Amino acid sequence: MDKMKKEILFSRKAIDLRVRELAAGISRDYQGRELIVIGVLKGAFIFMADLIRSMTIPCRVDFARLASYGAGSVSNGKVILTKDIETSIRGKDILIVEDIVDTGVTLSYFVEWLQERNPRSLRVCAFLDKRGRRKVTFEADYVGFAIEDGFVVGYGLDFDEKARFLPDVYIMKD
Ligand code: IMP
Image 1 (cartoon, rainbow, N blue to C red):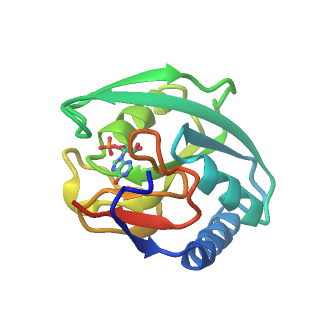
Image 2: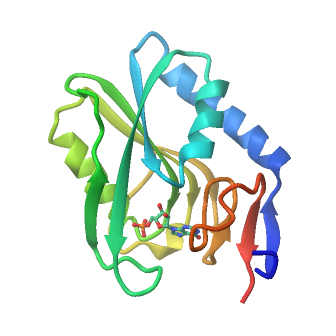
């Protein structure tokens, strides 16, 4: 782990500021509504914990887990749900919270899956967005930071299950 070559991309201070801004926007948008926040495991757990604690509106939480298959770290469009949510979302305002949008394949699948259950509204908040790497059209409604190509770790994001616990976000070198 210590041998992973990496450089800081976003410090915990910069992350904290941005998460507060996102939380303020979400709180304004959902004022007076009953929001259910759905985190995508495992990557989103730290971001989601910070986000909802910075929000000034109440919410309920649930989690889902998705797996995508492909060569190496690139998904090939096959996504399966390995853990479904446990809450009824029909007629409810739903906010999906994800660590990063890359090809867009995972979130397009999950959004479609949830839409079939007829929520009142469904939006996506992604901590990071690699816009240049989409394989399918997908736009998150709230984005922490847009980033260029490259592999990032920390603040919930892993490389081979390592580095999720790091409070800052790093970009891997080599
Ligand atoms: P997508 O389906 O290609 O958009 O993949 C999204 C998932 O790929 C994310 O939820 C992450 O688990 C993983 N992923 C994509 N890029 C990175 C990265 O730079 N660091 C860590 N995980 C990543």
